[in-house]
Length: 144
Image (cartoon, rainbow, N blue to C red; front, side):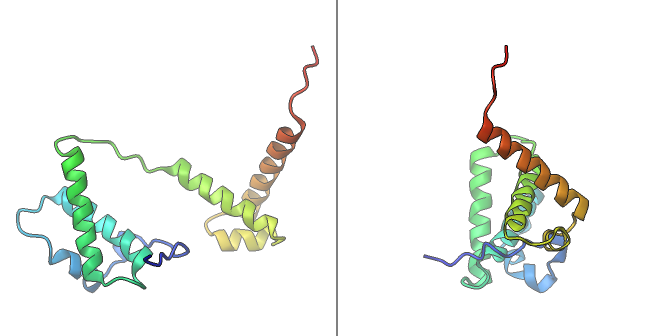
């Protein structure tokens, strides 16, 4: 099995240098549509983030192109809307906050570790989670 670096944070596309992206760019020919290039770059960056320690960048570039060809084959001719997925990101961040709070870390430490979040927001997330957990344990009383 290929080792996956799940802990690595995926950088932004603009963080790639010309040398970083060169293995992928070499696979583009003049007829490669710009949309394909965009998808391939995004997929390449994700693959680099996950597998850079165990795979050659040339192999990851080829995988990115194969994935792009798959998208083109499955969805070619369509103009799908691709949502940002902010709810998934928020949910993942909220889970990370709860997990860190459960280890006994201070609110300030949790905010620093998670990044781009205030200490006050950490408190709010933990309070809402505790209320939700309490409600799940207690259930709802039929008082009528």
